[in-house]
Length: 78
Image 1 (tube, helix red, strand yellow):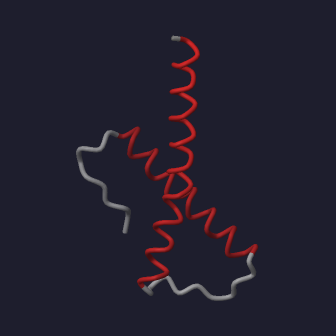
Image 2: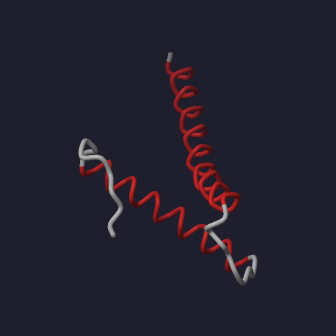
């Protein structure tokens, strides 16, 4: 079953959301394989919330970095 997004999401934003979800899933898979974890049960609430928070952290730190660089550029130019 395909991922359902609201009809109001433009196609470009939809593609960006889906690619971000794919990247976070790939990063999770890489971390599981590097940590040599044999089984991961995603159905437990702690694991599910940990996956969601862990996937958001990467994008949150990236957004904070871009915001601080943008504000510093404004500071330099003004």
